Every structure is written in C-alpha cells, then in structure tokens.
Image (cartoon, rainbow, N blue to C red):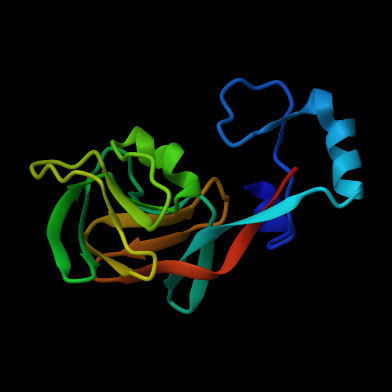
Length: 186
C-alpha cells in the first residue's frame, strides 16, 4: 500500500519476504531472481485493481484496500448516516463504516464481518450499536455518502498517515477512483 501511494499506477510485484499471512503475496523472495528474469524476458501480465477515493472539502484520499470513516475518540461512538444508491441508513451509532475494494475485501473489511468479493464496492460497519446491519456489496459505480450526525470522526485510507477530520453536519463522498493499481504476474 505504501508503494502504491508513493508510486501510483506504476506496476508492482508483490513479494513476500518471510510472511505466512500475506494473502496477496504470490511470490517468495527466495524465487526473486527467476521472477525478475521472466519479467526481463517480457513473460508477465499486468492485472489492474480498482481503488476508492474520498472527496472531502476539496481534498482527496485514495485507498487501495479501503476508505473508512471512524470515530476519532475511541471511548465515544460516532453517530453517522450512510447513503448509497437508494438505500439510506440513518443515525447509526458505532465506531464507523468501511468502504472496501475487492483487493481489500480480505483485510479489515473481512474482520468486520464482510465476505471476500471479486467485483463492486463492499460496505461494512464497525461495531454498530443497536442496529445490526450485515456487510453488503454495491455496484462499482456507486456513490457513497457518509454524514456525521454527532461526534468527531476521521476519514482514513488504508494504513496512510494522512487523514481528514470530519465533524457534525459534514459529509464525505466515496466512490471508485479513476486511478487503478497495477500488479505484475508472471
């Protein structure tokens, strides 16, 4: 995720060094010389993954895995509403909402009850109080709006240190980005 932020749209080769938990790492560091040889011979394919973007007060955040609106103060729940297509979820109370790409569906999204998916944009709620809403997937071209009704939240993207603070009455628009992430497969 760091390399995608630093070098957006440049094709990446995901290599695991010594990790058994990386679900996206198809290639081992032990085989790197063979892999690089194949790439130098042109024996590879580029696979593209969608990214999601949050637009807030003229600024933008991009997420390869997800965008989330999360409570700023861990001891206080966030009251928020979510609008997606014709669905309206008003006055939700909890830690927030996760808007995930298919690439990110096996990460934080799945830890909040979402199922891994291949197409669309996933929406999962983090620790909702009172209302129990199952995670769901919407079409890729959906526009998702989150409005903070009470409290202070943070708009976060992946594990990026850059974030925006969102206050009562403010809204963020989240949608598929025009930019894609590119990955190399041999």
